Length: 99
Image 1 (cartoon, rainbow, N blue to C red):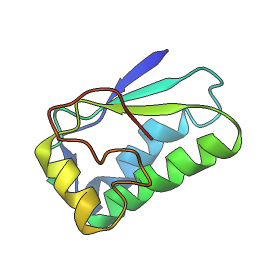
Image 2: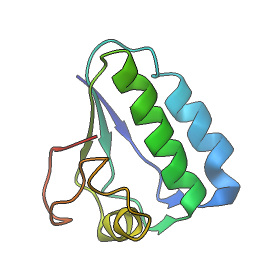
Image 3: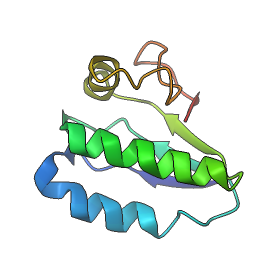
């Protein structure tokens, strides 16, 4: 499993950098762990990108896991109605939440 730490800022002005970070791993066949403990700021664009990335990987049978989701990320996912679909509906201090 490859581990990839998400940046602290998933704001709209950082989405292109996040896209570059993630796009390098979209075709990785092995499981990908997105460590989200450092996420402190989130915009809808960042969450939408994470969702699209995880969905694209899932279509190819490539598992993606979100671990150590920060409270900020969990709250954003819940507000946007994506927490359950991204598998991050557990308390924010849990680990190993599937995407």
